[in-house]
Structure formats: structure tokens, C-alpha cells
Amino acid sequence: MERILVIGGARALGAAVARRAVKDGYDVVIGARDLAAADVLASEIGATAVRIDLQDETTIAAAAARLEDGVDHIVMTGSAPHDVRAVDLDHDKLVAAFTAKVIGPLLVAKRFAPVLRPTGSIVLFSGVVGWRPGPGSLVKGTTNGAVEFAARHLAADLAPVRVNAISPGVIDSGAWDRLGDGKAALLTKSAAGTLVGRHGETEDVVDAVMWLLHAGFISGETIHLEGGARNKIA
Ligand SMILES: NC(=O)c1ccc[n+]([C@@H]2O[C@H](COP(=O)([O-])OP(=O)(O)OC[C@H]3O[C@@H](n4cnc5c(N)ncnc54)[C@H](OP(=O)(O)O)[C@@H]3O)[C@@H](O)[C@H]2O)c1
Image (cartoon, rainbow, N blue to C red; front, side, top):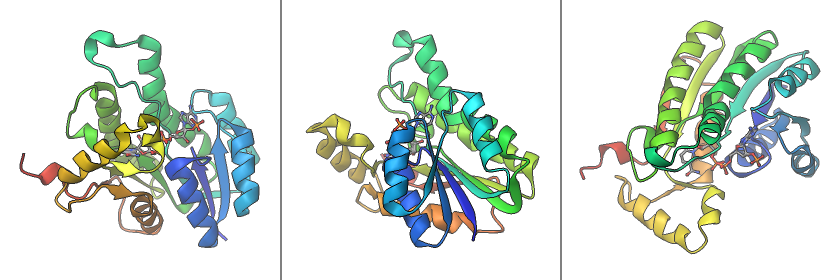
């Protein structure tokens, strides 16, 4: 049985990946900074939980030590948005955003490289605003761009372990529920900005992650899962 560690796996897209992976027969470990939330989901779906805070390398090292008998795949969905314009940048929030998406995953690679099986893979998460700037998307866009290069360079560094990134468009993952009534407008606008005329669903992302885990001839790539949004004529 292959083991998959899903960091950010206690909710939204990470939780959906964890649920599917259990159904598909993986030994699933949910990594989250909120261990209680990870434990609740883990016992519901038949997984185990480990505390990992991407801001704290000691938690990453402790998780790697606990899983020292081997890990096949790691999926990392961490994100700490800081959606402001340049004049409103806050240093600590900027660092937190880069840590959740880039620095933390690089430290996961550092700590898990010794336990990752050579046939395994890592999946990182980028996002469409890396390629299509929007209001307040400076930090998210820059971190998403960095994720693409992290996937390329980690793939070279960790070979033969494959490393890839998924770059979603707007997905109704639960992350946008915080917009309240504004969520419907966002989904409608994002659908209009695609070639396929709809927003993304959680299952679109989960399908892509599960496929990528065993796409054995793909490494160092970013898969754009956005309904063709970058190719839409404005
Ligand atoms: N949903 C979309 O429309 C969309 C579009 C483009 C790109 N993406 C990218 O896809 C990924 C997943 O998206 P989502 O919709 O599931 O996002 P989300 O709802 O914002 O979830 C982000 C996850 O990151 C975790 N996280 C944040 N900081 C962390 C840290 N320091 N250590 C460990 N975990 C941390 C959160 O855990 P807590 O529960 O502890 O906060 C949560 O599980 C993100 O990278 C996001 O940027 C999403």
C-alpha cells in the first residue's frame, strides 16, 4: 500500500485529496497545523494525522522522523493569502505567504528527501493569478510563480522522485465561503473568464492530483487546471 502525506489536508482541497486517496486504497497521513482538526477527519475517513506547521521546521522534522519507514507521495496545499496592493504590504504577512507556499514546501523536501521512495512524487500548489494579475494579487501571484520554479528545481534536485505543481483557476473548494454573498459573483466572473464557461470544482482538482501521482513520465511541470483561462481573449 502506498503512503501519501497531504499537508494542509484537514480542510478544503487538501481534505478532498485525503478523502479520495483513502477511497483509492492509499495509506493516508493528514498533515495539518491544527492537529485536532486533522484527527477528526482522520478518524472519520480511516487515515492518520500528524502535526505539521509549514512555518515551523521542527514540526516538519518531527513528522519526517515519525514517518521514517517511508513515504511515497506528498501533496502540499498550504496557502496564507496576503491580498493587498504594494503600498499596503506587511512584512510578516508577506513572509508568511512565501512560507506557506514556497519556503515550507522546500523545507518539507529537505526533511522528507531521506524517506521518500524513489518511485514517489511531490505535488505542489500554484494558482492562475501567477499568470493573470488581478486586484490585490501581487503576493499570491508572485508566490504562485515561485511554486512553478520550485517544482522545476526540486524535480532536478530530488530525481528520480517526481515533483510537479498544479495551478488551479478559481475552484469552489470552500476557501471562498469567507466572501459570503460575494462568492457567487466571484464564481460567475471566473466562469466568464474561462474557455469552458464554468468555475472549477473540487473534484476537478482531486482528479488531477490522483492522476499526477502516477504520471510517471512527468516531472518538473506545472499543470494548468483553469478551463483555459490564460488563453481567453480579453
Ligand atoms: N481554491 C481556489 O480557488 C484556488 C485557486 C488557485 C490556487 N489555489 C491554491 O490551491 C491550494 C489549496 O487551495 P484551497 O482552496 O484548499 O485553500 P484554503 O482553503 O485556503 O486552504 C489552505 C490550506 O493551507 C493550510 N495552511 C495554511 N498555512 C499553513 C501552515 N503554516 N502550515 C500548514 N498548513 C497551512 C490551511 O490549514 P488551516 O486549516 O490550518 O488554515 C489549509 O488547509 C492553495 O495553495 C491555494 O493557493 C486555490
